Image (cartoon, rainbow, N blue to C red; front, side, top):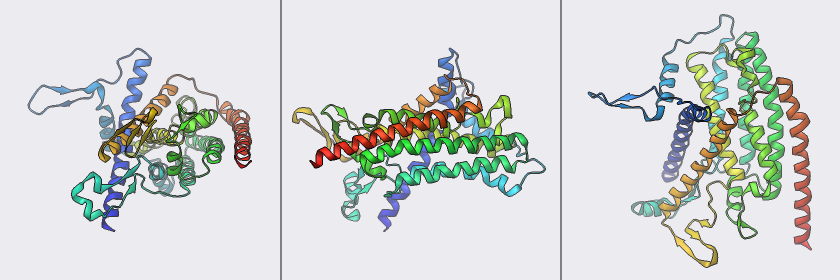
Length: 383
């Protein structure tokens, strides 16, 4: 149907624009947040001059990301002489594309009714409603791990295809590290699957819209606080960020698996890293922070304690849900950058030992306790 096509094209454009925007803005956030933490000024040089005037729009260095993008685009694309040309060219896209695809199954808002949002289109849409999610799949969470697992192939392919020993070592490090922490992430999420009884991300978010014990939001972090810590730690390691940036350790491997990449190919690797920060933020928000939900909020407004209500128009609800989701994602992204500029780097043997000897047992213990609690709860309800 034409109506459906229009809605989903808008969803896709929104998702791509949001992720690209986050990827650009987070390069600035990282510079400014690091500067604030170390008592420096930070990015403040790039500007846009208004035509025919001497007015320079600096905006706290916000244009540095744009300047970096232009620099990447116009740089010469150097290639090693002995590289595998096909694998070398494909590897950045194998890393970049799946990062974008992950967002396709993440709900970024509640239910959209175009007829209520634009009354003039009510007859054309005929009362159709659409969940604000590009692909509503019953196995949405499984698709997240399927797409994220593809990036492992890209990093290893980049290291091997470059015909460089530092790149090869970086690719091997990336593969073993990402596989290790992917397992930990999967085990932590199993606890949430047991609690909510589904792998549908949209259903998980809906179940986080109520309250626990009458005053706590029914978010995943309330049900699984320990799993939330494990998930965030494993996700940062999966993204190869400090203190887990051993696959691209400058002091040891020059730049790791993308040592031989320049110009926009290197830009794709770096941009994918910043977009993945946003994806981790969106996933953590969806799984543990209630997604687009606010306490006491529903599709018609707010149902306040004591029986009071605050009615909102459909447009106000849609905008509120979008803004709430983006603000939660931004907070989680800022936390990841805070960790990056706070903790020192591990040794590589410590990275793998931390995954297999520390985090994996903790994830298994958390899963075991969750299974017991869910079983006792169901037994109590059954009796």
